[in-house]
Amino acid sequence: MIIKLQLPATATATRQQASKTVQQPTRKDRVKADRIVIAIIYLLGIIGAAVFA
Image (tube, rainbow, N blue to C red):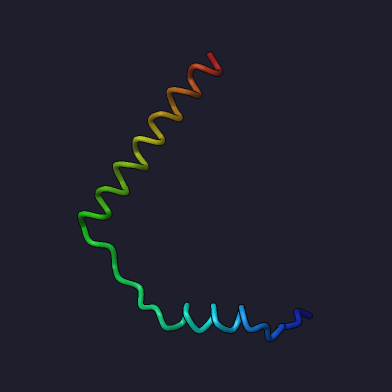
């Protein structure tokens, strides 16, 4: 069984997290994230090919 401790730091952090509203990423943000991920995967492929060749 997990014991929940009532520490001032965790209580404050919990209240702050609950009060924030999450905004949906715009299309521009998603495209930017996709490009970054694709670039990382591309570089990992090149590095992997060099290492295992």
